[in-house]
Length: 219
Image (cartoon, rainbow, N blue to C red; front, side):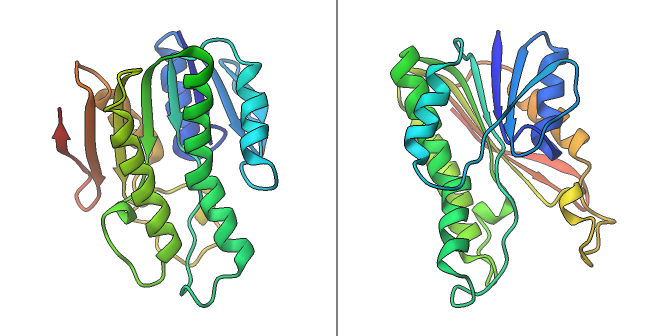
């Protein structure tokens, strides 16, 4: 069994990759930085920039068959819509939106099927916030696109998990209070538990204060 973790070289993506490796999966992780994990193979891939569909197509063409696709790519973006530059908007849409679409498309073109899709969104997928307009747009889109893929008979099962803020390296130089943020290792454990069982689609919120899992829908 093989898993491809997009955004799997840090934070929650890395923790999920380590968890899948522990379950016996051969794990390939992509990201902008290398990862020193003996059970994870790293492939550098930048989700922003030109020719994204073509680059994803070439990347997927060179992969062995993938059983589980985990999409955990993205970063937090803040700013009023009028404060964000064209480049900032386009990069956020590329990294969090278009890349998910093209990875799923290219895998299905090549393999004709995908056993499992796990998409990591955020509380911003359902909570509108003044300073997160593009982030809201991307995270909501990720979830709804993945929900749609559960209706495609070529995709075996789809899990959409939306965690609250996590204490990752992203926040190290930020004044934001991290004391109540979720531990990414704990969140990864919840994601791996949520993927168990027989279903076509499952959507779960992973909340904090207190830390808990709320399964919103399973079908």
